[in-house]
Length: 253
Image (cartoon, rainbow, N blue to C red; front, side, top):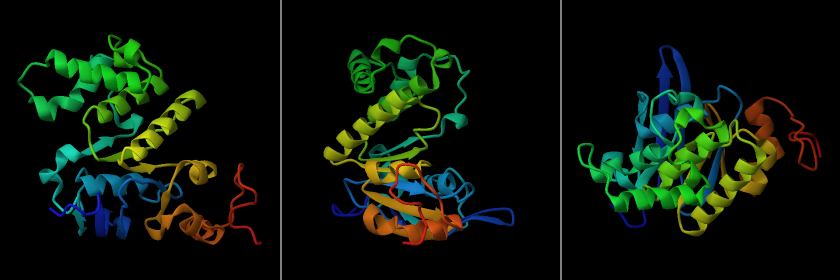
């Protein structure tokens, strides 16, 4: 494993569902210590790309490396926050127990959670503002609270790379601001984040880099060069008017 290896390197990733090619020959390499948004229209393969890289869906082709190695060799350095819709919220478990699950790879499934482990879980929950909810059933929390708990579960792992699938979906403005502040602090600490995102108006404000996708790569790089009107028009198939930008995205200038 190279010390200077990219947190995530993807070469020719292709994912097929029967005859449908959801992601086609996708290639990119993440820069360490950056917040990167995965952006594209509905059905563009954004979530599928993350799941393919993590081995959560079958991959038809491609080479994936995490820190220059196979995921199995560096799994402790990689954390994943799934979509809220993919989680069984009726499972009888408390918020604190959910966060402690982030330590199970370190603890072992058959060993007891120690006081030191609980203190780490509490510290992670404090960072996202849900420490007071530790004893509540996860099903009883609001969508924003549930999302914060899952972020705390990822944080407690102490990973170097975080893959997040729509963490802003279904949360209120206060929670979104808290998540943005947390992501900024993680970046300042040298962490790398790849995040599926839908709100085009906030890409310029929240992220350093963007991966613009529509089943295949449209553009990738710093927001100022990879998120131009022309590139977004190409990805979305036409000009868009986005509230929060000075001009309609894709409009003639």
